[in-house]
Every structure is written in structure tokens, then in C-alpha cells.
Length: 181
Image 1: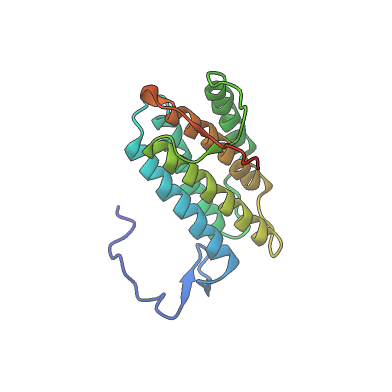
Image 2: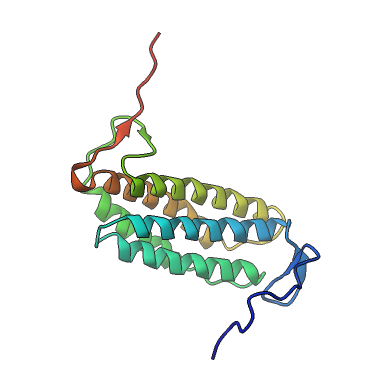
């Protein structure tokens, strides 16, 4: 059975939007901003997936996209918790596996390296913003602590994936060069 039969409803024309529990809130609310950040992160990950050509990375990013959709659902239903600690544990397993093949960091990495890696760095930055937005929301309302942990670890995973993507097909990372004057 289809979930949406019409894309537009006109109910948001007054600057409000509906939450999953039926309440209407301003589109400028902290909760809606947090949902928007998660949506933007998911969209940037879609770009990374479209650009990246690594069979071991795509299933990870697809799984993350599904979990981000779950987080958006959790945020749209105040008081409802979907995110579990095991989600973060899974991110850590992927992190450990991918990071094991990378050389130790000697210097900061500049975002770039390849189109896919650059977009993955962008996703990492959007993830950090989403985490900050969720922290702002937690100052007003109760937020699932597992969701905050997940976003924190996800930004780490995206950094490592960007490093892997930059090295694909003989590419390399660009490291920060200190200005010494």
C-alpha cells in the first residue's frame, strides 16, 4: 500500500510542519533543524555512493543511509527511541576494519583527494553539524543518548572512508602544510 498518494499537502504553507505524533511545529524549530541536518547528511551520502566505486564501501554507506532515515523518524516522534547502542558498535567494527589498512596519520588531511573523497569529507562536516544540532535539541528536550553517540562515531567513520576513497586507484591524500615564516 502506498504511503504517499500526493506529494504536496499545502499544510506547511503557514511555516509549520507536522511531527509523527500529529503535532504541528514551526519549521524553524530546533527539532526540525535537526531533522533537516540528518536529511542533508543522508543526501550527501547518496552523492558519495554515486561517485564511489568500491564494493566494500557501498554496503556500509547504504546501511548508514537506512539508519539515518531511522534517526529522522526517531526525531519526528518526540519521546520515541529507535537508535540502539549496537548501531554504534557496528560503526566501530567498520572503523577498525577500514582503518587497519591505512597508514598512521602524520598530519591533518585536507578535504579532497578525489570527487568521492571530497564529498565524503563534506558528509563528515554535515554529520558534525547534525550532531551539534542534536546537542542543541538536547538542551531543550530529552534526546536519545545512543543517537548522539551514533552521530559522533559516524563522523569518525566518514573520515576514515574519505581516506580510503582518496587512495582509490592510486590516488592520494593531501596533507596540511604548515606555514613557517
